[in-house]
Length: 247
Image (tube, rainbow, N blue to C red):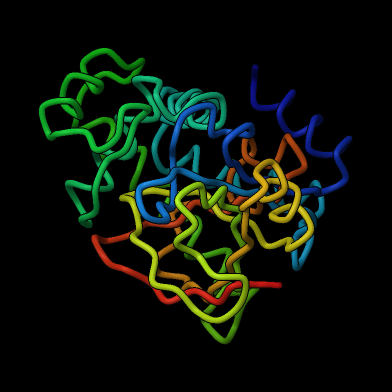
């Protein structure tokens, strides 16, 4: 899909947003783990919607920074992230995030090694590690520019629906969750609840994420903006985060 077509698709969607869980992007197990269980979630509407002219200007800017080829690579790799966290391009993105900022890489079979990440990078549609880093950094810088304007207090409240198969998350209170190198959250509690309800023991959790820990969002990447789920892709940096269980 060409850039003009992407812009047209966003205009049709009216500025809606997106995210992923087991069933969305998460055909496998990208994201938060609650006692070893994979989970995910989605977002609904953006806090501050960008109009088509702002979207065009923003993405022409990022394309001008990294070039046409790298920009198209960004679109392709993001698409694979949304389709399946176990794809080579998705693992390659998480490998770069882990290498630069820390955090575990996850696939369908659990934690992946550095060698697994390097293998995924070789198998991905990207040229090499240097090119992948260029794409990754450009997306991150663009996200920071946009979100600092939209969220002046420096934080974004995000939600996630988790299946909680092991029953380690209570019905209320707070919980510490391990963060992958990259994981998907949502700004919509309703969308997160939809994913949590896929399991009888599912829970919705929420936390406030500092802008500097967000790699991409529905407002900063045209592919993420296409499914209307309001996704926010968070960099875990090898940390745990305290989340509140939403009744």
